[in-house]
Image 1 (cartoon, rainbow, N blue to C red):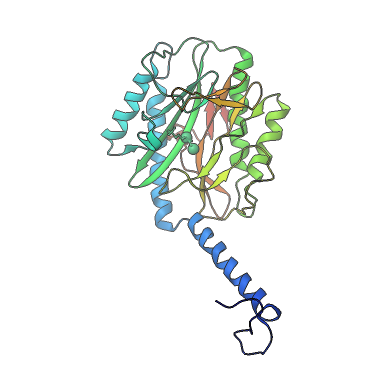
Image 2 (tube, rainbow, N blue to C red):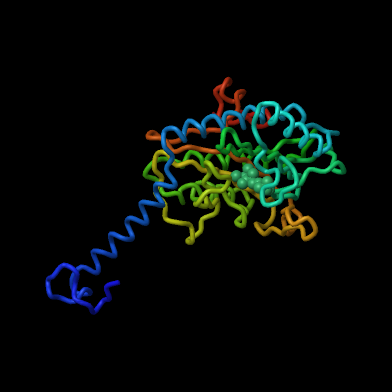
Length: 306
Ligand code: MF3
Ligand code: CO
Ligand code: CO
């Protein structure tokens, strides 16, 4: 290996540090950058795979929606997710992921995310409950979630869910080629704060493709540590803000190692979609067939977001 004070390889007779060192360093770092970019940008074939995975995930959400009602146990919802996914020849991605024991995450009231379905947990009037579905379709992942209202939910808590849905849409709308990835957080956090709620920091969106969680992290809160990524057509990732009624702090259950709750016991809501950056803007890969048929971005409590 050539050292800084050696003669340059080009034969100029100058020391390497006074000659080609800087240029060589630049080349090396741009080829690293390129490798990373290539990893983030899907080929046309991979995009087709992601479209199919997203479409199935949306179809599964449309199927599950009718069952998310007062009186059902969360284990029953898990069973329905498992069976529907297998019946269609696909795989629930959560099952066995880092040891996760079930096929779906179901997070109720003060549970922020990663709630484990249980036969002891029955949906009750006034609850809010997030159902987070992830499936593997021919090697590609689709990931989306919705928070449902069970029976009569207080107007304050309904507002939390509505703001969270809107926050996700603002985040998705900020996805455009040429925009910074940080535009997502910049669209979400000020809005959520202005409504008096807080954005969870410890859990984020993520690149997605042939793997569940791919290299980059999508923050929903404005953070100087977020990677300075410029969005380009062909990138696929999730936008999935978790919004708390109280503070943003969360704690993980020490016994099961999964269930994440708000630290102050306040309610928490979440919505998630998988998106693809396109030449024009973005495509929401996990929109459900009913959302597509009605030409709406998302429906919440009879309110349609265009
Ligand atoms: N679906 C979650 C997400 O949106 C991840 C769940 S991982 C699991 O990223 F292991 F808890 F299932
Ligand atoms: Co996700
Ligand atoms: Co998810």
